[in-house]
Image (cartoon, rainbow, N blue to C red; front, side):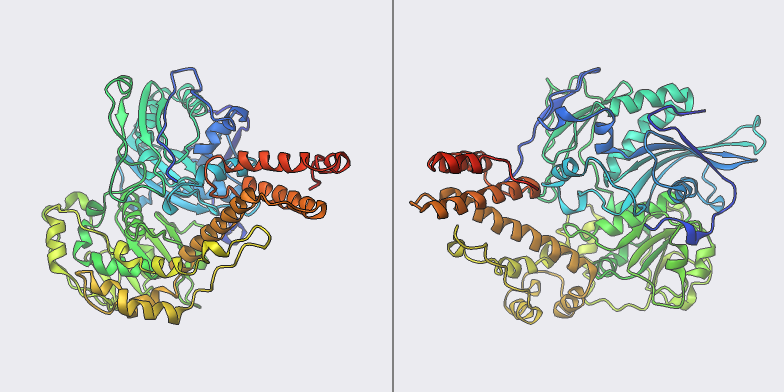
Length: 582
């Protein structure tokens, strides 16, 4: 089968390549956008300028079909973009199939994540940044990695030499919309396996008519005769709530309504190690090296994704691989014994890793969930030396001593299905201290540069915990102060603080811009020219960096610039009306 598109690519993978040669490489209102078949729906001004396949690229990088040929090995066909050089396609080939020991018969869904080649740049960069502006931290587009969402089918077929039909349909994307893309594959893959190429061509054309996934929008997305309704969350949404409402009139054409596009079922994913959930939250929060050993890629990827999401609303800022194999380009980097294991969460299924990664400090062993009956019995944390093979009993193998005491009452409530407030919500006390680093608004002057944020001082922050720390309000007891000291050294804190500092700096720039807009006193010609130049620079910055200014501020600023220029002599007007050189 050949997939025809703007780029037609195929690659056979017969032997593993040398791994060293591979690439390293204010709330927006909800808006109902209905796309009748064959139309593009209502366009935002910038979307009206998009070229063919640009809409597709706001959702997916490409769609891959990975098959297995007894003589040629794994082969990948790509539609419509190239996921990178040979290393990227090789990674997709191996990560799209379960390990042979997994024994996955029938249909299996899972996801993986791999590093983007360093030479890849999107021509849609500026436009895609606008779709991320109001997104929650955990839903922003990946900068250095791709996600692969897999629908794998393995069924007996006596007509084939191997005796089995084995093929995967894979969606490659930078968007972590796990629930949405798995639901999309449940529609696309069975149809594709039955009807092959024409069906996939139609799906790609459907996706290329979808509007971009701007946060706050409610979208109805047609795909292969089915209509999916979703809402893209915003960073302003209240945690634990869904703003996707049913409308009998507008939903008459809707086949599927997804209440979430990204959340995983934490209770189901943590089922085998449920009694250790508090300790696992700490390990993830602190960016500790963790490996999940599971019987199948589905259980491996589900558990890793649950671990990463359990510290929400914090974004997990270290690397994580929901499904990792010996063919991965980072295999040598992540399994070396010459240095301490990196801050990464790996999900594996190959028994080989039980030996290769036995020096890792924290190992989670997941049993077969399909065979699990009653709730797993309460297990003690096991010593690492007891883990020798993948035949070891399920459990958590670690020498880690938790900072916080286990709360049996919370575990009992969770078992009963009673929703509990996540520890991360109480833990984010740094927000209060960081907000105090913001200069007072009265210190912002149109004739001075914007004031700088005060520096984050760990000693000052730790003092605030004594009077306003979570130990005063949370039912969880233990060494909160020690946990914070450890957290402040982690990649998760560094990533969170960098993001908050950037947001606050942009807020200062926006307030400075608004102060310039309000400047109305009389000036000399020299001062007026200086003001115009400042206003033009601020206007360019506001548009380039998408500063969080109040609605109408940019329009007001343009009008203000024009009014100031018209008050000047004609010779100066002519000079200032010329476009500035880059």
